[in-house]
Image (cartoon, rainbow, N blue to C red; front, side):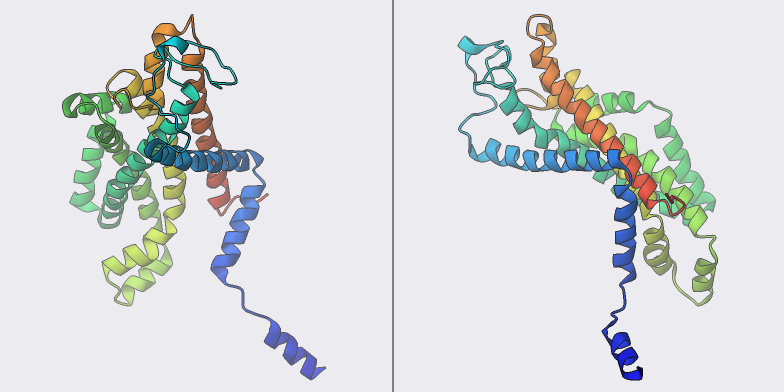
Length: 302
């Protein structure tokens, strides 16, 4: 008996707490069916966007997104053109595939830039407080005083319409959102007892921030990042639709909507398919973001 019990103890491997927490997270996420649907849709779109980017650069299909054929203009969906053709005879399906990585790229890049600036500002404001907190948050309040789309319009009007300028404009408008969320989480975390104990042991501010505060506030950052990507995609599409974003003939979805608005009644498919792609992607990000919020919340138990 004693020998058997020793062998059983020897064979039992310690469970990595990080692996266990990831398993618990996935179990909670699986309970939200809509979040899983959103996740699978996003994975599918990411794979298609990679193929679209490669095809646009290397021409695997042999069809360019800007290839025109005036003899086939304004044709409806068919076996030859699954989503029909636009007013210049360009294949809408190919343009949507090629434009997918542009639309998703703007959303991810703008969110990354906003987080790169907003997260440090929020941590500094929440951790140190005082005059630094006052200056940072008053600047954020000034930016928040402008509606996001109007602020982006003003910035793009000054910088000019291009993919890079649209990304910068959307990112600037999103910095306050990240800063305020991170500041609130930092204020809550720095008051915890273990942070006071670490500080009493002589730990420096940098070690406390990067090793103890930042890892514990990643949940709201991740959730906010996921949800804001959808907002960034909508903003980029809106600016392109107004003619101030990504410029033609680049097959960005908002620009495609702008190209087809004069033909909505005689060829509604020109605007229907790019519009549906925007709706599906934004809905998928929102569903997945809501599921992440529930799965990362330690109080969420079902």
